[in-house]
Length: 103
View 1 (tube, rainbow, N blue to C red):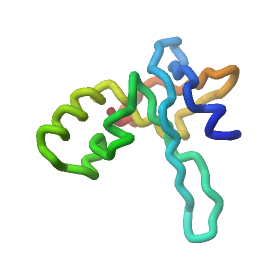
View 2 (view 1 turned 90 degrees about the vertical axis):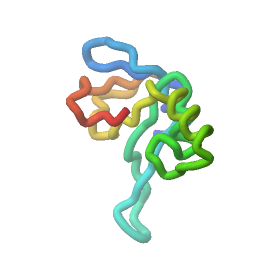
View 3 (view 1 turned 180 degrees about the horizontal axis):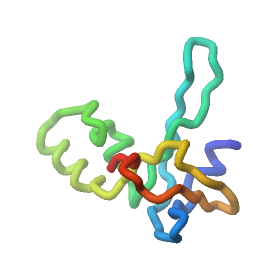
View 4 (view 1 turned 60 degrees about the horizontal axis):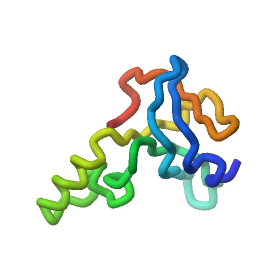
């Protein structure tokens, strides 16, 4: 699977509720030299807060910009790849939110 297969795909939960579009793919690996794997996808209207590092509080300033970007990204979600049930025809289906999806 390529990242381009996921980017822009519509994300739905198994109950059919629309979660937004996939705007980013997070990769991780177990250690030096280990293969990269998909760790999470970022879905929502824009994912701007995640792209700029404000959603995870990795970036704290300037203060006014942080507040604005976090407000704009209030409905973005990071969905762990372990919650993904299927990916087909530009649709990503995930298990319903069970407290594991970080807003």
